[in-house]
Length: 71
Image 1 (cartoon, rainbow, N blue to C red):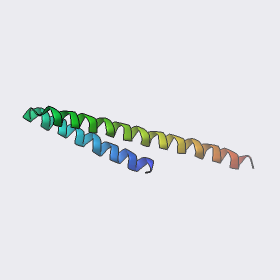
Image 2 (image 1 turned 90 degrees about the horizontal axis):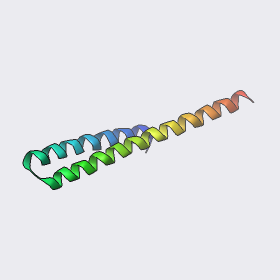
Image 3 (image 1 turned 90 degrees about the vertical axis):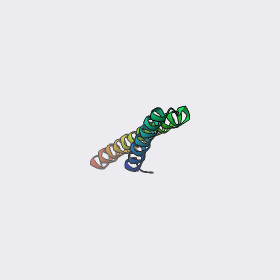
Image 4 (image 1 turned 180 degrees about the vertical axis):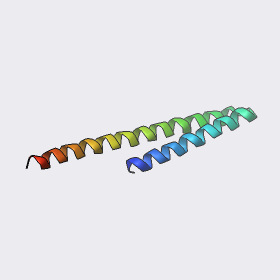
């Protein structure tokens, strides 16, 4: 996945996790709350991966640009 798709998937997972947590809390279902928390954390991790990919790409682009300027 690219950085943007990682970020979008992460946001979706985080939002779904938050909804599951709220639903679990509303009906007193601890398992649903725990599943929601796990999905929220997964989403946060996916977003972090997307951010890291974007940073690596930006760094690589900067190195490439500098190399081309020195040719």
